[in-house]
Each structure stands twice: as C-alpha cells, then as structure tokens.
Image (cartoon, rainbow, N blue to C red; front, side, top):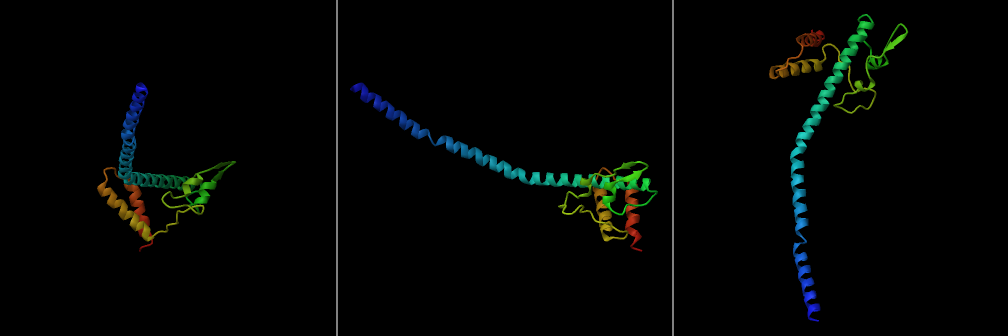
Amino acid sequence: MNTNEEMNKKRRNANQEQREESGYALVGLMAVMMFMLILTTAAAPKLKLEMQREKEEEMFWRGQQIAIAIERFRAFRGGAFPTSLEELVEGVDVGTKRFHLLRPSAICDPMTPCEDETNWRLVNPGDPLLKELLDAIIISQEKSQNPINPQGIQELARFAQMGAV
C-alpha cells in the first residue's frame, strides 16, 4: 500500500508541475502576435505609398502607349487626329489588313475607377489643365536628375498657349 500511496503522490506532483507551466505557451504566443502586429502597423504606410507609385507608373505607361497610338494613327491617316480613344482600339484599315493601335485596357486611367469605356478626358488647346501639367513638369524637372525630353515639353507649352491668346 505504501507503494500505491507513493505513486499517487508522484502523480499529484507531476500534475502540479504541469499546471504551473501551462500558461507560458499562451503568453509566448500572445507576445509573438503583438510583435507581428507592431511590424504590420509600421509597414502599412510604406505599402500604401508603394501601391500609389505603382499606379502612377502604370498611368504614365498607359499615357505613353496612347501617345504612340495617336502618332501611328496620324501616320496612317495623313496627319489627322482620332476623334476618340475607341477609334484607336478599333484600329486602322490599311489595304486588306487592320492594325490595332491600342489595347482596350489602356483607355482606362488606373488612378481613378473606370466606370464607362474610358475615364480619360479630352483636353483642348488653352485648357487650364495643360498649364497645371506644364507647371508640375517644370517643378519635377528642377528636382529630378532624369530630364524629360525637352521637345515634348516645348510641344506641351505651345499647345497650352494656343487657346490662351
């Protein structure tokens, strides 16, 4: 009987040791989760800024694609401008072939939601938006080490002043 009591005593001691250690794993898990939360909170603004930069790069790239498509359209049509961006997507018939100048996804500006077929707007000579764009380009040129094509800036300046006279 003595051995039976000793075994019961050993079991009780073992159970008490387990009870004393049972909360440490939970506390450790909570500490790791709090550390992860702090890291995520610190990284969130950088991720948001990075997403904004990617959208800006995509918008700039799409704008370049539209400009190239307009130049090609003018080359095919003897200097005439397209009446809409959809005309660039539909393409130009040359002989028996049709040349598509622009992919459909390029006519949506990635910075704003595209509800209709396009969210780009027509800019006429003398539009105040051109002056704002030209001022922004000049300011960014002063800060940047990578200059933009000066011929393109001169053309934009001439186009901005056309309707202002």
